[in-house]
Length: 342
Image 1 (tube, rainbow, N blue to C red):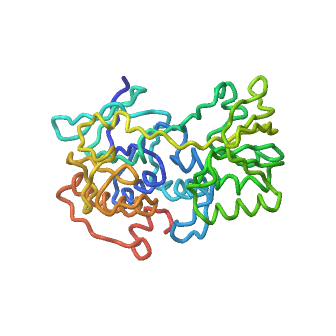
Image 2 (cartoon, rainbow, N blue to C red):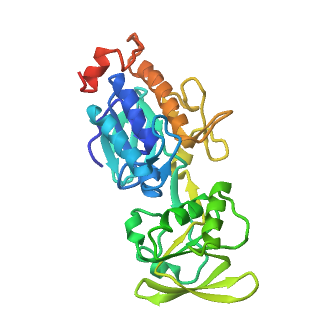
């Protein structure tokens, strides 16, 4: 086990909300270390939809998931956070002096008076569809997310699913793929009605294909798909040329070790107050999709708000005798110096 690293705040989760928490804490002169199970910052935005457009970030009419992460990393750069990536927090233990010892599965030990859980829905992984032999094609021609749209250029792409992810990527990949085929088990979709209408318009124009049925058989060799056999709801079978497949069967969300940290839980989420976003354990906060309170909205912008209020409460724990003067970044020369703009 490595020597303990002392810091002000340990943030569990390096998604957009965890990253913005670094900014809010930094304005209050609080140093943060972040721990994330992924090998890069950004959480679901970077892992599942880096090129997917996001439309509800204030000030950005549209921004991709990866661009949002890049902007946040640029914004927090003045505060020099330390990221511990590819690691999962396994233990959180309160010490006799009131601080917390946080230990990862790689043996890192962090000690801080405040822990912030910004882990989204916890550890997540795509659900594997019940298709025989699909494992042989994973990572080569079967993917559960789109990292680069260019990887699908001029490919015969089959997308399986009927939710927002399936529809969004059908619309986004149709212009670059040689042919897109959407397969869904029924002629009713869970995605946004506007996306459904756009998809059906493309089908009617002959610019993509829609098959109502289920994938039966994968054909190919050495991890490379060539064809997929789809069984229609009428019993007919269709062999479709396919070199890339994107199954969207949802995500399996697991709290993992967080469930064993002694916190009160509400339907696998962490209840918090709406003044500080503190959990049932004093000094441990939860912000973003991982938390729950009456009226909670699972939006990135909600997590940003929660991070701001959490930071004020964290400052009071870390520096109980210090008077906190609220300042605006637009007018405070003190804050502007911290940000390196003055």
